Amino acid sequence: MEALLNEWLWQEEYWLPPGVRWQDIEVKEDEGRFPRPRDLIYTLPLAFAFIALRYVFERIIADPLSKRLGVKDRIWIRAASIPKLETFYKQSSRQPSQNEVVSLGKQCGLSQRKIQTWFRHRRNQDRPGNTKKFSEASWRFVFYVASFTAGLGSLFDTPWLWDHRECWRGYPKQPVAEAHYCYYVLEMGFYLSLLLCVSVDVKRKDFREQVIHHIATIFLIAFSYCANFVRVGTLVMLVHDSSDFLLESAKMFHYAGWRGQCDSLFVVFALVFLLTRLVVFPGRVVHATLVVSQEFFQPFFGYYFFNALLLVLQALHIFWAYLILRMVYKFMFLGKLERDERSDEESEVGDEEEEPEDEGDECSWEQRKGAINSKLASLANNCVLNNLTNQRNITSRLPKAR
Image (cartoon, rainbow, N blue to C red):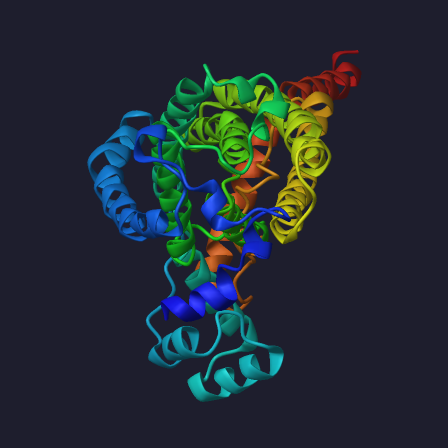
């Protein structure tokens, strides 16, 4: 297996610039750590450790915190217990076609409207509550804050944070500090845990983009470490962490119903996101790897592959920036943030709206009649209508007075 890997995977032309061999970049132990692929093997058990830690965090810290902040879950109408529909829901489809609705109606002796209503109520039962969303957002918030703080602290004194040409000076013989190695392992382990939990987390409108983002990030971290693009890789991770914790904090306040704090944090997040992802990332990081690097070595396979992953991330940044600008437009012209356009909208949008029950249902008719009566009562109490009524009564009494 080792010989096969050396022959096909670890060929020097894939990982090193032309004219450089593996023995040319070997460093002594006292000179520092040189990146080895086997160093990343710790990320897999670390990902499972993150999943276990998240489970404990959400139940011990996030859930009690959500209650203290006033997070409330919406109560949905529970679907009636109908075994045939429940079996179809779990084994076949959550959204049956018209032909399937007709067939299920014949089997259960129900109208098509009642079949559709049952499935809508059943889907709403499975909708994640605000408490679950709050717990997920708080977990990511804690990690992003810790990651950004640790990354900034480890990079603040490095020359390549301020001068992007220092990313390539001496490449590829660049020893890696222990702090940067730990930074890499923690980030890759965390994104692996997000990818492993993507099927059980809240499914959002940008689900596919999130999966692509996680996969591209994992490949980017792993490849950049193996190819010793560590200096640029640390900058990429720092740029991403700088705005992510702001978004998660805005989500937490949104689920708690704190509109003012949510709107303020979202505006700050939008400014930081647009600055870091559309200005700093392409202007400094991508430019450093795409253009400046050619001053120090000739392009090779690793150069093209690494830049391709960076461009995939940049395309996702543009997509999310479009959604964020839509939100900013709504905030400026409508005065409030009605929904999170970036990643807080569930994929099944239309299920929240409750349609009226079948006309033959006496209970639902009584409910609708009561709602109509309450609306009429509120209109009767309206001051404008009262004034008009009083004026009409006065004019009707005038002829009698005469």
